[in-house]
Image (cartoon, rainbow, N blue to C red; front, side):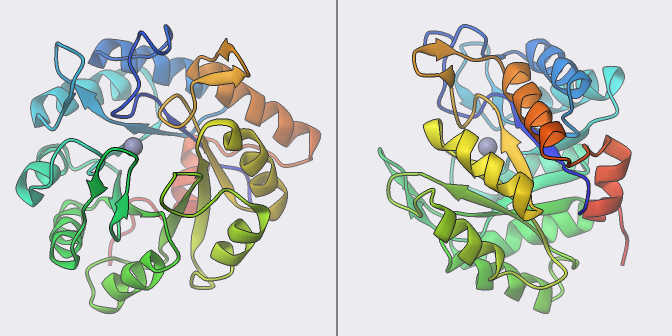
Length: 273
Ligand code: ZN
């Protein structure tokens, strides 16, 4: 079985320090958290940016500061979020990718409901983001909230807007999209192209069981405070605790952990057409 790639989703758009005292918010805090996660087994960090007030921002300069700080101290693959709750304008959502040309970025290939709003990603917007990533040499991670988003991602490859093999992230347990069940994870993992890779990001209490399934199924795992604030019920987690637990589980289950360099090879990060 392929080595296990652990992604740490460090901050997200929704959590606050009031919700979890370990949440990294400033570019410097995010870089420190990334370094600690790398030391315990992460090879990718998925990052969002916050302004000085701690609110989500798409300011490319903030992303650039964060990116520099992470790359100064680690060899981790930096995956920039182009989604979430920071706005619906394609120019704004792709500004950081244009400026930084990161190794990876997230790309949600459809719309869904969040508890408080619609997460809107039209086909036009998806294609615009894909073009920017392609031009920037950035590998997209296709964020899949529902099965219907998979053919949208495959279509990007068919149109030449994304370079196969594609990489998917199944986001499970969001109220309004697919539930975090073994059946859904199996179904999704069998619904992607044969040469594609996948990881699972499950929300809240589903993070640990879905991560465990992915380890034994041959998928990859995303954990971190973006998706889950707790180590166990009532006990706040830090990013590195969540990464270290997955690394320990993988060790017990006989699945070795990929270094950042090995993750680049597995995911074809940096491949050119
Ligand atoms: Zn995110």
